[in-house]
Image (cartoon, rainbow, N blue to C red; front, side, top):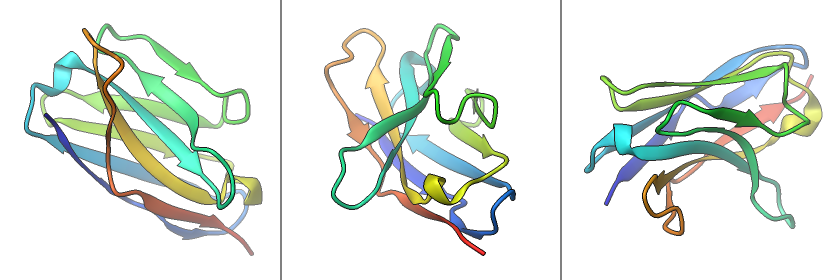
Length: 118
């Protein structure tokens, strides 16, 4: 089992940047496929970016070119660098972990609010 704690959210103006962090504990971090999801009220949680244990990354089309996902296995931490933020990026952002050998299991953090507004 893995425990996830997000940080780094906040209020930022359009065009600004934020970096989210997700600290993991409890299981070998390097064995997990890690991702960031976001959710707005009334909508389903959606994938923003993923960084697999094997080193592959993928992004949703709406953030491609603006956001960068990275991980530091030595620090058991996942990051999301968000640049060129837009009001439509406003959401609660959740860190997700899936065992790379059994992706049907999901672990979630508590979420961190990102608000993009002038």
